[in-house]
Image (cartoon, one colour):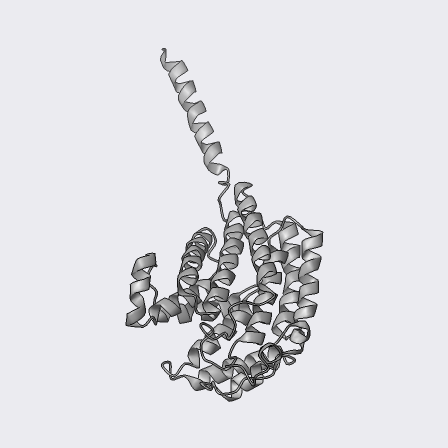
Length: 312
């Protein structure tokens, strides 16, 4: 091979490598925002505002519209499942308990089947987006949020093993999501809840952590992640503020004033949700529960099912 031919081949090889390196990876976080997904999220924000304001019926309509206009997106299904979690929480939980886990009075509700169906669709749509390299960071975010909801429902009822399994899957997905795109602040809600709970786990419960091989958590990191989600979250900012306020209302945190301030912020932002004022005025209380929001008017309440008094 003569020297001129060798040089030509070397130049061609270097140019091809430069062109290849300049192309964005299919898993690159710098891919432009999908216009359809961006519009879905813009619509979804209206539904999330209604949901946090206590109008779950109105929120359901908005999320159903997203399912109709973009049936291949996980967003509409994921957020409709979110409204069902709130219905179940309002109607079965002790709303003033500082915890949001192991506080439900019922292990089964009429909403469970549809809730699980919606999560199944959201997960399938998210995985399809990953296979198509369709904004993989956001696809991972949506799938992680679906497993977060699964963990939250199981945790609400004190079902430790399924909560741990779903939480472990959620954490792995959300960690991959923010590794690709750290600006996806909604991911920090699930990560913050996980880190805080694992970082405050009683010693007796650490055996389960070892059995399920759960990664360790950190209380301070969890609180900071919840603060970030509350401040920067695109869809989950209000929920992150709620979970942060709940955590700070724990006696172990000794931060009732901070919890109160957050609940007052929620009350100003979403004035029609009657959950916030009682939560704000009685931090650390667990004796009485506020009335269910008007959004729950079509949802069986604990009182109507059990003919009992306030939430236990």
